[in-house]
Length: 306
Image (tube, rainbow, N blue to C red):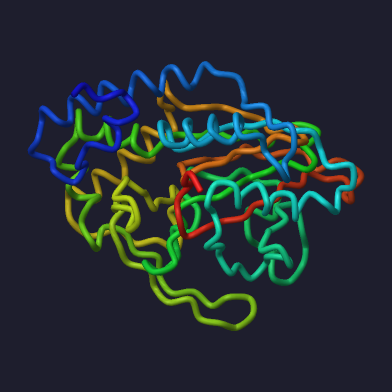
């Protein structure tokens, strides 16, 4: 039986670095699908709260292939309806194990906008400053790792606020092709440590120690935890890991040909399996009450078909 490109993506043990034939088949299918998906227009979703079956299937198809999908939908008539509509949208993709975030509202949704609130002051996501490359929740404990999230734009910035997005499986390919020793270092269970941190509410967040690439516990698909920041992070002290960390920062800064660039407008969003992403700085404008506003809700399980 001949496998389709999509089936080849799941019929591959990416942790087995010795099976070159299986890797080549998976690699060719992955790169071909990624190039195809990058050229597609956003998926049109008629209703955020009730995505049509055709839109739902297409969004799932893209997320299974390249781990993210860009969508566009009409804004709800009442802005207060956006948060509950976004949770219903996430429910349509089996995303029900939501993160208990300290800044989340009643719907488990975090409002990302410039803020001087005590619990948000000093954290870059709540500022106009650029965000470096990262995956969400890289500081979480292994039992609380983020596997997927939805980022939905309520109001765009006047200028700036562009995101770059890269599927971690593409980065895996670049490493395995050119620097397999770096890849092995990043698979080490103590490759990256985020030291303990005192939260604004007084709670102590324990140190988070783990690999950069790891298998999703539910599906076995590749997941990634990473940050390009150089403060409050400790890398395993060996030559291969130090070289791998430097390569990651330099490579992501240069940009991969399969990087997606998108500046979300109102009603647009990204559904994804916690892909690599960054954000340029942006102009808040004179009316701070109308500053850039994105809703984000994060989950401990990956996007599924039900």
